[in-house]
Length: 217
Image (tube, rainbow, N blue to C red; front, side, top):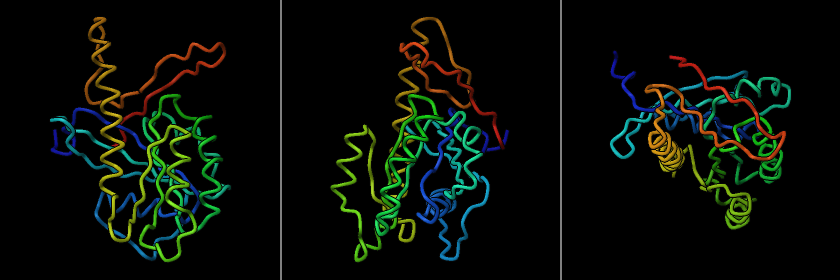
């Protein structure tokens, strides 16, 4: 087994938000410490992986990035399947990308697991002189929607590491608590697999069958 394959948990995290908000550069900054000023809009889907340590456990993050353009929305069902975390990204200098957060959040809640961990991310914080979205407005919205919130800059690396570390740690804590409960009942979760966070919804007609995602690499 190669070093890259030695992990305790594999978590699928998706990046969503309008085209041009910097999702691809957040991905490349976190996974490869790279930033490309000339990056084109993503067409289709791509993902990259990186492992981090949380409380002595190795967490392998499989981070998926897709285009924000409407014409690629047909991929949504497969894109969200098995995701346990999502970064909902907007551009602090473009108010329309913040206005569209509501629509993205609805799509996420329609397609993803009920218990997915969601973080609202105001990207391009280096463009503070062009700011169109006040930090407090976004923070208050995140609180009302029960989302975590952070502002980042993929250009100068501000808070990129923190954003991914925070969401992966939050997912890990939920999963480890769930495992603790399962082991108390005599159940167990398999190692080295995508863990699907799912607490059955008691509302009639609101239960959806969930499936994990196979290892891609």
